[in-house]
Image (tube, rainbow, N blue to C red; front, top):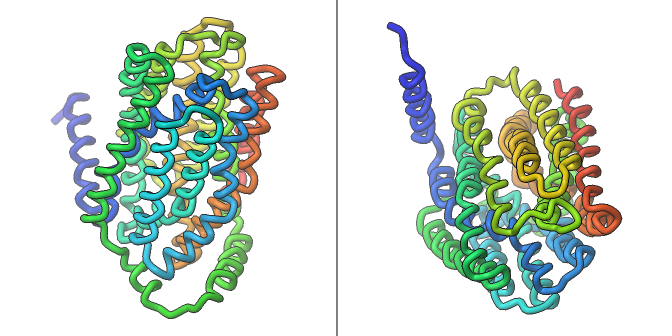
Length: 419
């Protein structure tokens, strides 16, 4: 019996929902509540640099302030990995999530100058303690074969947030840039408070987390555990390449996301209206939605390398399109967003799954520490990038994106080394 495209689409959607039933409890809770964080915070991250400039901050100061959380990220994730093994993943996650995000949003809401913006960035830095812990709790207690669908659904939430960005743009258009941003910060504050309450009630400690936290390791575990874990990473070529790809991807992501809104709105660059640029996340969301719904969840292990290569090439073409775009060219910006969405899917879904599966090949009990090391090393290299980007931006608005293009070229070379 021949099946129509509609029948195939329905079957694919049903298969994706069947995968969800086989996730661990924590994965279900974290994914189902992520929209309360992902949607409003996507708006916050997109517009906070424009808000900073509305307060009179220069591009160089904006870059320096955005770098502050990355400075914390150079050492706090390792401490977070230790706390997660010692006291449990859930308690560590909930404590730092609440202090960091609620504090950051309150500071942004009342900010009227660089000091309170700096305080907000310091609170965002506190959150970096649990970057690796969140992802560890997300995948533990879920079989390897269903982790791809977990990451796909997480990214779909952020894709949906991209579709909703015009609502944030409308809010800014109605209330003005500065006051509209304050309302975005307040909305995010309320949503995250609800998310934290739900997660506190429903999350459980993972099986591995219970085993590790019940053991008496003593304070020496922080040093000896990380040194041993680092040796495991260095000895495994595949894991080392993936770790490097993740770090390079974070460099590109930080540089691009920090200065993209400024570049789109800058009279010396594309000179697009602040409310109009909200269509850019929508443009990148459409192909990402298709890929994450129907392609990424069905990728076989043998196809991952090719998928990564294709995605990086598309991302490179997207940045080149943006660099060559003439002033006022909204169409060029949209095409750039569509092409660049491929690298977003690759780094945040395909590469993350490959990273998690490779950790299982090395040592699943070291997951929290390996994730913390990845976060720390990423920060050590990327923390000066927003400041560097600020200086590059003053030379020419397109320079940060030229730098990002070079990092994508390096990633293409690195993927070739994955066996």
